[in-house]
Length: 323
Image (tube, rainbow, N blue to C red; front, side, top):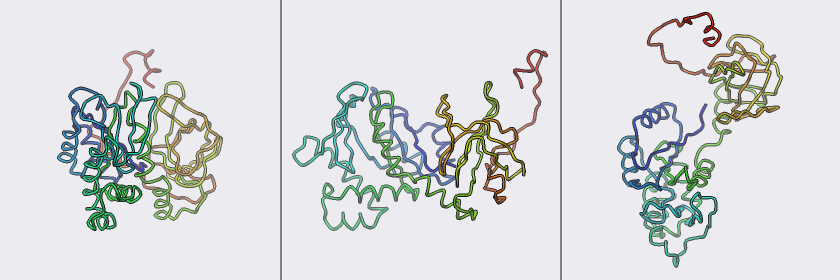
């Protein structure tokens, strides 16, 4: 269901227990990841301690993609190592940014080349082309950005390393390079979609979606979250639940972002959306066209229950709220 993930680490705490638990789940499902070292504007934050924590507790090679311009906690700017660009924040909340290339005359060149050389050395263990270029004597600042980005993506998709970005989410610093990193280094939805289509022999353009979560909203009723792997799911369309052999109509099709819901006319291949109005869809059910081939995707693995119990309202007036 998930093509990639962004792990957020507290620069003051390092890898915490819950982060480790989620990381192990991502390992189980072979999900490529990048990381964000957050709260670097706070006193007591430490990049090196966080990196060591990632390496020790998560058993993965951490790759620093950008670094602060100095070792203070001001976070006035960042150095992007693959592109050798300097991002200077002109205000406290990171709304205004100046960008300039770092050449040999730049005041930050020595700091940039120190971390870039370390990054190139790490990547040489995962990419032969980069290793050949580095071992042949090419200076770290002369190695092409495209070659470094290719090696980073290769190491991430191969689950050998995790790319780490620095910043402060609260102050909107380092967030834009992180989002660029999602596009550059994590797999596109089409990659995993193509794998699913091949594995289950789904015809191109034929609707095939997987319901992965069902919640009961007080106002809207049952909301089914799904991902479309093939074709297009349209609003007011009749769909077949391939697991139950039951036809239902989509009453409302939406894109959900936190507490906001945007009504849509269609959800295309690779996108995630939500359906209102379907009463019988369960987590893990496959949704297809009303007259489509009966394809069943691999559902959601549910852990066995620890115990069983029933819940009843104390008073009759509380029954409606319980329902």
